Amino acid sequence: MGNEYEVVAYEKLRHFKVFLNRITYRNFHIHSAFELELILEGTGQLNLRDSHIGLTPGALVILNPNEPHEIDAPDGVLAVIFQVSQHFCQDYIPTFRHLMFHQSDVSACFSRDDALYQRCCELVCKASLCYLREEEGFDLGCISYITDLFRKLVGNVPHEVLTSQDRNKRKKRIQRITRLTDYLDENYLSPVRLQDLAELEGLTPTHVSHLFTDYYGISFQEYLNNLRFEKAMTCLRNTQLSQVEIAESSGFSDPKYLSRTIQKRLGCSLREYQEQMTDSGGAVPYGDQSPLEYWYPPEDSIDPIEAFLKELR
Image (cartoon, rainbow, N blue to C red; front, side, top):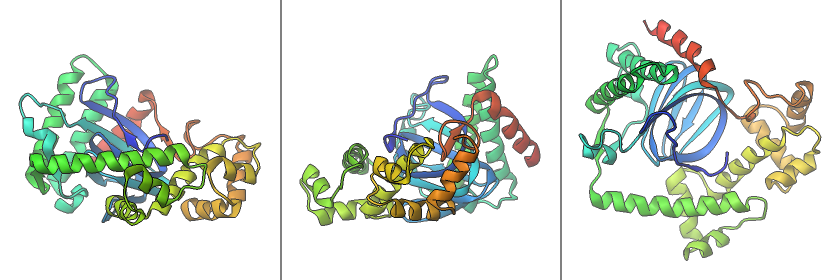
């Protein structure tokens, strides 16, 4: 899971990336790109700083660069993750990098049965399949679909182009919160106090507390517990570790506290989850990457997207 600030790497096509992801839980994090999430299967909830979006099949969400979001889906959601750099088409549309959407739930701007909404979902699928198949001319195909998609989003989803003053203010805020979350990622095994973060930034503990609440919509302690939960789930892959060892390896002071967190997130106790892992030989559903998140390889991503696209038609 690592750093909660993710710089998107564009390995195949400049300024654009697609992958299929099954997610159970993902702590609050931000990306350096626009991110669209099209839900193919499952249900869950996307939590933003001041709102919550229900994730059901056919839901389409757009997230601004550096917009904190958390995914909570105990039974798992299968989503096409579609990331577009702020620098996409910068020679032709220099204001694109300063674009900010005010509504993340795209379906709130349309009806789910609306032909235009279905066209947006179709464009996500077509661009994704074009990218994943990587056939001759796929780069031009992707660019065509992406520009058509954003033209429709800009025409129908409330948005603004940020001023230079707003951009600078936003940049400083992101840099500060990133330093704080980097510190937590490096020190989550130790008792971490608000005072420690305050001293890091030369602020008061109250100011730091408000930073977390204002930026993520949750308290500093909730953020830290969520981070430790993610770390604990990685430790649980080792079925030889005791509950005490798992708690210590993830920063929890008490296995009972960890068990309550797992119960809240996954609907089962720590012991029950360990038994499931033992019965499966340490394997996790949908692959061997993480109990909470699995990235499908390209060859396994095409069929689910094609199946969803056929349903749209």
